[in-house]
Length: 76
View 1 (cartoon, rainbow, N blue to C red):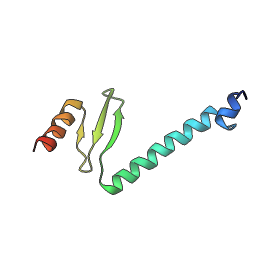
View 2: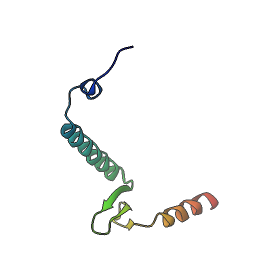
View 3: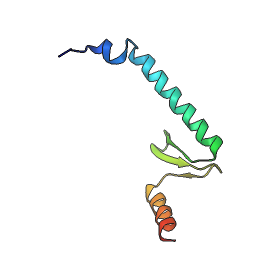
View 4: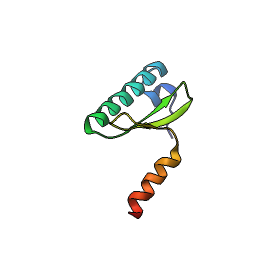
């Protein structure tokens, strides 16, 4: 069985570079979602809470409201 070291598992890319690439990938994905008119998720560092932001700018911080909205769609 062949053993892999740390460089093999990351293809020689540093942790800092992997982090930078991940952040950029998330930014690009959020821009694509905005163009398509889809909600994006984010994190408000001031309130220390995650949120969902809709294309009209409305932010929902409470996950329970999202669940209620989803139930309304399914229960009609």
